[in-house]
Image (cartoon, rainbow over all chains, first blue to last red; front, side):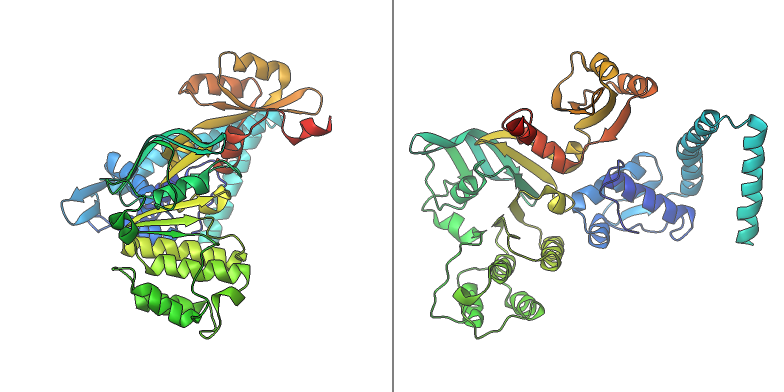
Length: 128
Length: 298
């Protein structure tokens, strides 16, 4: 992933989000050690303090836990926490935007639901 | 531990103050960006830190000692700019070997590898290098010296964009392997912001602000929309920048004061909120006159 430094989302949030995606995709699984701030700094070409801030967000949300002297590890229920959070924040915001746009374009509720269903079938079909 | 500590630091050139009551301190093992417009006093400040210049009044401590004529500071710091002079009798390769004898933490292997990577001719003299090549060579000396306080004054001037990227990456990699205090002056904020931990912004010899880069990103917010609605939101706010677009629209940058609710309300009333890049924010904060260049032509 390449970080987007022009984005409104601060770099440390982008780091936190990237780590979350790694956990959702099970690239890093429960009780596995996560990248250190120095590894992240090297990977993304950023200051290690910025990387640490990204890690700390996840630690505050109990997605990661600290083993003294060993580093940060993925919590057992990390995936559930992230899924729940993303649903109530990111997905919620996207739906908000979607509905707002639909109203502006005078698309009826039924038409919108229909569009979502069709898109759902299409993407699911492509995955299989 | 604090590496640099200044209190009411002032430097007078003739009758004008290059630095004016500057107070700040820099913690150990951070990469700090010194940002400011031309003539803001960046180079003067860095040269005083390195012990090249006397200050006029106030106090400055580097490694807890006054830097001017100080052996401890000289041995533990290096100042890199594009006006460094090297003995004209030595070739580039000889310079690299000789430089090593002055610095206790010098890494000859790193110096040689960088020297080869940037394909320098070992037999050429420093005076015959192009501007960009000079900057690149000086950068190699600065990195290989591994000084606990490494100061780069406009290190990338003259470098092409490929070398610039390599330089920033080299600084980061060597910093990760060997943490030390690095101060980097630049007016190209955009290029360095990801590398920095803190930013020290100075304006006309005075401190404008000193804070972590990530905090600075959330320091201000841009608002644009119809002038009448914008003006309503603005009452009692700290306006950093203002520009009118067309006949009835305005773009303003204000300092965020934590009232997230008000901003959400502004968004609902049809105003557009945008993030302000650090680059632009630094420009707005340090501009000398209101109205900008357009004002000259009106």
